[in-house]
Image (cartoon, rainbow over all chains, first blue to last red; front, side, top):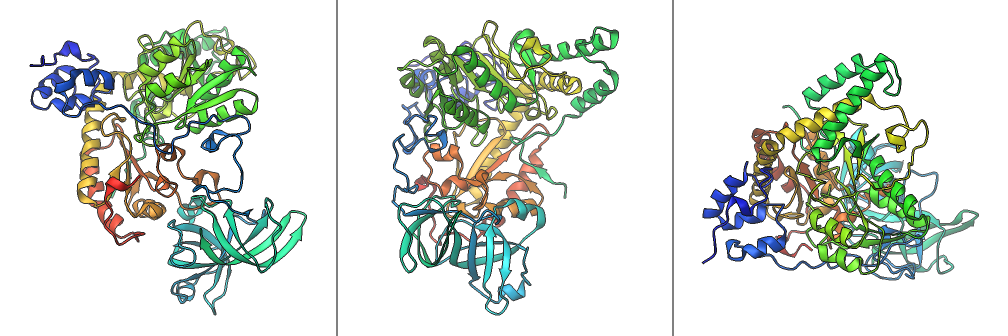
Amino acid sequence: MPQPISVADLPGLNCGVCGLRTCADMVDRLASQPGYLERCIHLSNHRIGAAGSHSDRPAAPKQAAATAPQVACTASVPCATRSAPATAVPFRDSLDREFDFYLEHFPEDPGPREILIPHNPMLTRELAIQRGDILLGRPLGMSCGCPITHCGVAMEVDLRTGVIVWCVTGPLQTRERGFKDLGYYIAEGYEGLITKSRVEPKIGMRYFFQPRMCMLQWRHSGLVNYLNRTAAGWQVRLEGLWIG
Amino acid sequence: MPRLYFDQAATTPLDPRVAAAIRTAAQEFVGNPSSLHTDGRAARSAVEHARAQVAALINAAPEEIVFTASGTEADNFALFGAVAELAPSGVRLVTSAIEHPAVHETCRHLGRQGATVDSLPVDSEGVVQPEFLADALATPAQLVSAMEANNIVGAIEPIQELSTIARERSALFHTDAVQAAGHIPIDVRTTPIDLLSLSAHKLNGPKGIGALYVRSGVAMHPVVHGGGQERGLRSATENVAGIVGFGMAAEIAKAEMAHDAARLVTLRDHLIDGVLARIPGAYLLGPRYRRLPGHVCLAFAGHEGEAIKLLLALDEAGVAVSTGSACSASHRSQPSHVLRAMGFDPFRARGALRATLGRFNTAAEVDQFLQLLPPLVSSLGSITTLRTSPSNER
């Protein structure tokens, strides 16, 4: 028969962090609710475990999260990328899939440039979208199926076709200036710069690439239908987009 | 309808008693605390009184408190200051994967300067288990930095155990207690912490003032050079009004901690239980109980990609919360490194809703939130029409 827990077994801090004002209140509560002991933040798992039968949820040894990193971050491998070994091969996405190049946004643009069409193209006219408007929407569908709602600023608007060119900028402007909600849209193309590539891109070829600002860091694929070599890198347009 | 401010982990509103103390100090203490005349001595006296108030919050001696301009500066000072004394290029530093950028980025910088920086994993609740540190310290290290409580998921870390392990292996132990101080008890006399960072605005004090606890005997190299204030460790004329406000905030937090904590835990649990009961697919991130008293971090299965819409809808409805942000050109919009370290995939690691309660939130506000949230979540376009069970959300 286990000994009942007394105030002396508790930290005696009367800190309230368990939800009760005092440790004496905790002792009273334990009589009817032994599992309440795990609410004491000052007792280690070991000590709660020692209470054993007092707890209705015994402590179990903890495992590191499945993807938790165990690799050192060093000067050459920053902590943010520590899941990759110091000798990590670049051109791999967050799912460890290879890709051919990074797609950067043009330095003069506020973010990655995307050509899109709302699933209802009439929205472009109905919402009176014009250059500079802040827009919100998710790229639903076969192109390109990203699960993330995007925010951006309209750069070019074609009222006849409904096609919009925007730069994805993130939520800050949306909060500050209000927005127009596209709902779902189709991502038709990307334009940007290739500055890091393991292949020499060719027009007409389909490539795996990593949009630098993709927050999921998933590789995409697309067909190069415009290519222009400049001092800053390859200017490129990609259409026929897919994720993966 | 008055707005609901549920973003207390970002910053807390100024306590009116603190505001009054700051106003008085700003008007009364015209002198420079370093001046020898009467006005200077009055300001010095106010600074030292506040130093004792801040020290008492963590059971330190007043001379162990060094005022800084922020918690971030305190973290920078702790790491740069300690490493510079230890040996700039030969130091091994162990930190955790869930640290605030103030620690994380400072460690990266030290790494670029030649220090070896190792990052500890966390478990699926965001907790650095003591055995993770024990394993890491099988190889000698000179400095360990692990936060007292996590700002994203609210997990309270086992600092007693971690600091004890560090002490046994002769490593200095720093903890970023910015989220924890004033909300849970901290005692540097019974816990072998060598360096501890504090910030006033997380405990209903003013913004722009922080402090670093430096255990007596720990050698530190200053990072701000100049007139030699703060025992030569942090030069700059003291922010007298801010320091007075910090002192008052610390004194109130210490005196009212038990009352505030018990009340906030009740509100927190009511909020968690209410959301989980009302919204199918809602799931809690971080530990169920070993979390900061007012801290709630939730996600909604199938809606993780719509976090920005939820934030905007809540904001429009008059509620301030914190959440992941939409796909962005901004570095800050990358998936949470904390949730990534906890094992969430990049998609789910950006869909969390953080609602954090504080001293002035009420049960009526929580009830109001519980009325507002479910219809807003159900109005979001889910990525799936399937009913997803929270149990397979990792």
